[in-house]
Length: 96
Image 1 (tube, rainbow, N blue to C red):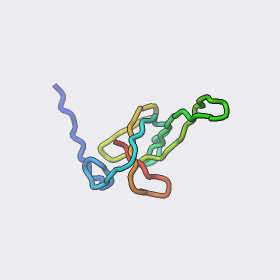
Image 2: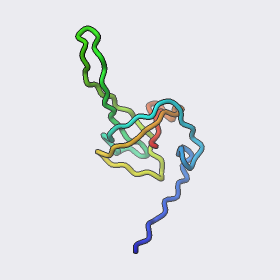
Image 3: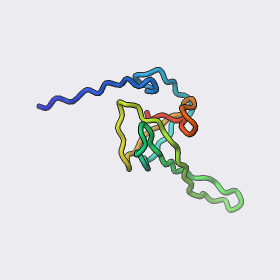
Image 4: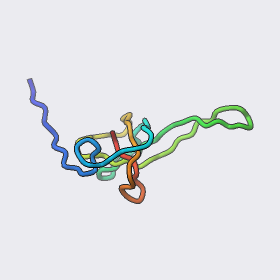
């Protein structure tokens, strides 16, 4: 039996091991890019109602997300993110 390597998280911006508080809605999306250090781009797809035609249209939004040390993501992964305080100019979400 193999021993799993224990990942030690010393990230202050981790919602589980650090002191970062989350609030707001929980979103689910797909990772579009994870090339930047501790950052991933997540695409969220949603439907919007067009009142004039009484139909739905597909839309999507791309958000920049903080990835703590204890998590690893790659392109195509389905992830859950949650809103938090502003972490940088473009990041205000964290990976759950």
